[in-house]
Length: 258
Image 1 (cartoon, one colour):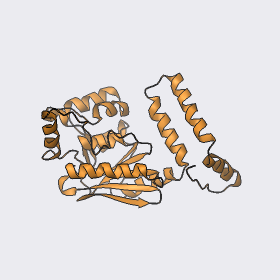
Image 2: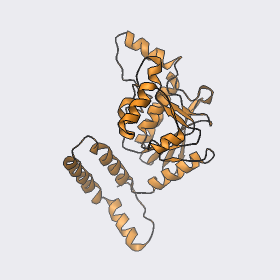
Image 3: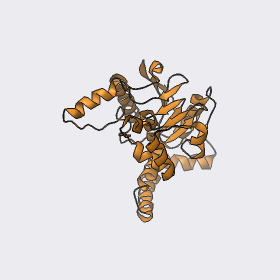
Image 4: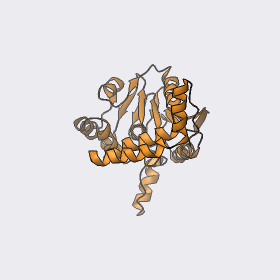
């Protein structure tokens, strides 16, 4: 039982390794996940991460209802109001992309963790849903915010209000996941995608991601100005000079993140 981190070139593979509990997060694993994501974000040699669950049954069932939720409820009843999240992952302001390799059930908080990722890939047996209304609560770690941004509003509304999950085929149809991949190759395919992104200019990847996410709350004019701000930040970098030089010389670029 652990949160495992494997480093492959400039990619971190973060695995929630608690398959006996469908990779649900108890307080210990919740804190460990936050540490893992923070370490990835702080490491200048890591550009992209893949988040997955151990085994082939669950990506994550979210909070361990026997331990993590009661701990949080006791804090609320004591007058505290800490932000409900999963290891800080669902609320952490981060600059680097994370790919979710959804290898089974991604339910409740597990769905919210997948929604907090930038790209979602799924195995054929994946199920995705926000079950919280069945427990007389609502999603509290981004579910009501990110799901309507990822799929049409009416579909998000139905999923959240009923609490019923959808299968991988439906998730693909509505655009919640990018691709359905064979269970046996899901992680390796996710790693291949991560390595591809990591081979691009790391500053450009961060700037493009930031521009995309920031534009959602801006007018079109303001978003264009914001995009140009990010463009000016990267066009003057050493990496940009290397990218243009490598293109002209018909060789692979060697980026330094500078």
